[in-house]
Amino acid sequence: MADTTGALNGPFSLAVSKDDWTPSSWRSKPIKQDVIYDSPASLTAALTKLERLPPIVTPTEIIKLRNSLRDAALGKAFLLQGGDCAELFSYCSADPIDSKIKLLLQMSLVLIWGANKPVVRIARMAGQFAKPRSSPTEIVDGKEIPSFRGDILNGFDASDRMPNPDRLVSAYFHSATTLNYVRAQLASGVADLHNPLDWGLGHVRDKALQTKYQRIVGSISDSLRFMRTVGADTAGQLQTVDLFTSHEGLVLEYEQSLTRRLRHPSNYTSPSTSTDGKGWYNTSAHFLWIGDRTRQIDGAHVEYFRGLENPIGIKVGPSMKGDELVRLLDIVNPRKYVGKVTLITRYGEGKVEELLGLHIEAVKASGHVVVWQCDPMHGNTRSTPTGIKTRHFSSIFSELSSALKIHKEHGSFLGGMHLELTGDAVTECVGGSEGLVEEDLSLNYTSYCDPRLNEKQALELAFLVAGHYRG
Ligand code: PEP
Ligand code: MN
Figure (tube, rainbow, N blue to C red):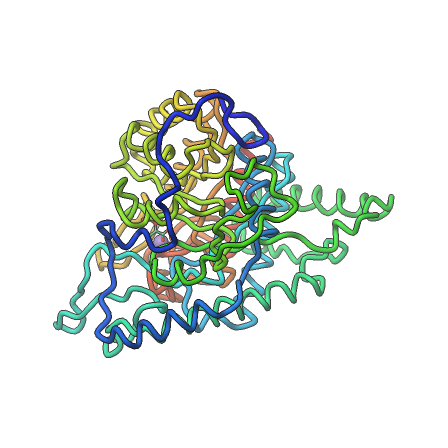
C-alpha cells in the first residue's frame, strides 16, 4: 500500500529505470498517430523557436495540482475536468473563454455542495489543439484528403490538410494567450464569489426539476451569503479560484520542446530522486493525458510520459486488460506516488458494468492509488441515421451513475469526471432538460470533432451528480 506522502513504503516492485529517459527518448520507440512533415528544415526551425520560448506554466503550479490530485485519489477532493474536444485557434477570444470559466466555476460550486469536498478544476483548454484520428484520410466532396488533426497540425479547410510546422509555434502563442486571459480574468474577480452568479434555469421545462435545481442554487447562494456576512473570508479565498489547464499529449515534438529541467518548487513533497534537486517538467500545461489510441506499453507516448514530474492521465477504454493497466501504471509511476496518475475510464454505458470493477480490483491489488475519473463521453458517441455524430444525455449520465455505484460496491470511489463541454448554446448532444432531439442538432452544431454538452446540459449533469451524493 502506498503512503499518503507520495512514496511507496518498501521495495519498489518494478525495475523500470528513469536513467535512460530523456525528453527525446520517445523517438526510438514505435509511434502511433505520427506526423510526417514535408519540410524537415521548417520543422527544425519551429522546434528551435519553441525551445527558446518561456514556460507557459511553472513547477510550483504543476506541483500544486499534483498535491491536490493526491487529495482526489484519497477521496478528499473531487476532480472536475472539462472543455472542448478540439480547441481551435479561433476559440482564443474573450467570450468563449469567459463562458467556459463561468460554467466550470458554477459546476464546481454545485459539486462542492453535493459531494461536500473541495473541487479541483482542470480546463481542457489553452492547448487542446491536437486530435488523434481513427483514419488518416477522409472523403470530402468525393475526394480522399488527409483527416483534420487539429489546429496544431493542419487546418479544417480541405485545402489546408498538409501538416505545417508553423502551426506548432502558433499553438504555443494561442495557448499562452488563452491562459493569459484566464489568469487576468481570475485575478480581476471573474470568479469572485462575493458577486452573485446568474444561474439561468428558465429553460428547465419540467417544473419539479426546476424547483429542485432552484433549491440547490438557493442553498449554495445562502451558504455564500452566510460566509460573507460572518466574515469567513479573511484569507480572501472567496475572491478567486484555481483553474488548471490540460490537453492530450499527442504531438510529442511540441511536448518535448516545452519539457524543461527545472528546480523542484518548495511545495514539492515527494522524495526527489534526482541529485541536483531538479526534475523534468512539461511546461505546456499543468496536466497532460495519454489518449486511448496512443497508450501502447512499448510505444513512444508512454515512453515520453514516464519521465515527467507533471500529474498525468491515461485514457482507459474497453480494450484495456487489467494486467496491461497495472503494467502501464508501473511504467509511468514506478514509485507509486499517490494521485500522480488519473485513470480516465471511458467504456460506454453498456460496458462499464463489465469492465470497471475488473480494473478497480486489478489496480487495488497492485498497490497503486490513482484518481478514478469517469469520462462518460467517448464510449457513448453515436451517429444519427443522417450521419451526425451525437451523444445522448441519458447515456452520459448512465455511465456516470454506474461508475459511482460500481466504485462504491468495490470499496473505491469516483474521484472525478471528464467532460466535453462548451459554455455556448450549441446543439450537439441530445436530451437534457431543454429536451433537445435529433432534429434540433442542425440548429447550432459547431464542433469540429466530438459533440459537446452545452452549458445547460453540463450544469444539469453537475446537479445530477451532486444529487447522487446528497441522496
Ligand atoms: C478525447 O478525449 O477527445 C479523445 C480522443 O479521447 P480518447 O483518447 O479516450 O478516445
Ligand atoms: Mn473527443
